[in-house]
View 1 (cartoon, helix red, strand yellow):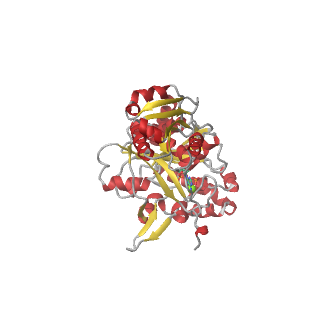
View 2: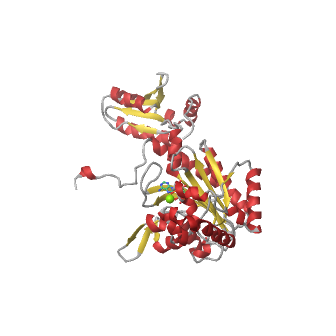
View 3: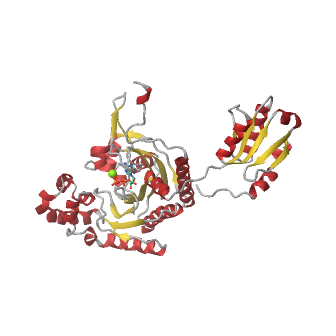
Length: 431
Ligand code: ATP
Ligand code: MG
């Protein structure tokens, strides 16, 4: 293989440069907002036993059927790169017996893997942020997680988002509904897209997820799930809506929003945008009161969501949110003894919380100063042989061109002095 052929694998990409600042901004907002709601971060392994996902996501789903990165390791175990976060979190809570310790709230963030056709906002390695609440069937838990999703998106100032809401009822409700749906669709079976034809016998509710216009047309007059809710699920649904309204969250009821698997119960929601073309969903979630039991734990109600971070980054970029780099001091140095001095000054300033870079090029001072300008540093510390002798160091403020002399080391160690200098400088806000 020649080195020219080395590139990131299809459906994966490097995140760097100004884009990484958007990721850090996003992650910081998530940490702050979820931290204030006392959610605990959890980091589960990137790969797990394949069985966890086939049981936890469900045979018959696109993820398990077509999208998993599954391999056998050298010990002959079947392992899978996680395609989503919930199954691993549930496995962890069961394993560490955390589900009989009252309500557990957690969040996670990290890379997920699905073998899909890559396109804008759809990759093979992508990142999700997710939250889960275990141990509460209270509609307030549903409201809490949706409100947190909303707070997070508000913090990013993303316009054009809609919260779509539905209830998929309890398993008994869905069984009655499924029978009605199959009865309605059977006469149209030949006109459905091929995937939906298979689903008609295997997992009829998932036909609602079909992206085929012909299928969606047929569904227009189909019976709708909300009409089949039992009284308990209906009451829960109403309380969820009342909670959202009380918090000022606007939502749109979408009776087409369904989940195909038995462990999904009651609340289902999705957050969509009009700005991402075909990849309209930035996140989704709902209640899955049956999942813990399906994975071998004691029955535990649960509710949560997951969001695709790539899609949020694309939305941030569309807004022209390009964060300005912020360097406080650039240290240029030329001549005997300046190398050590540059190290010492950078250490002193960094310990005071400033962002400091040393020029390592050993090129002519003029060239180094140009670099300070290019980086947009606030100030430039200029070290030459004379300065090593005099211990009087010129510091140039690049916005004004004003130069002052600071004595080393005392002047550089004087936090108060620098803080006053920087108080007058408008620092770029935001990411
Ligand atoms: P879609 O219908 O777009 O395939 P999904 O139903 O498979 O989405 P979920 O499993 O609910 O998606 O994942 C939650 C979120 O994760 C999605 O709303 C989306 O923002 C993001 N996501 C899912 N798959 C990908 C992917 N391959 N690349 C980037 N983001 C993704
Ligand atoms: Mg998908």
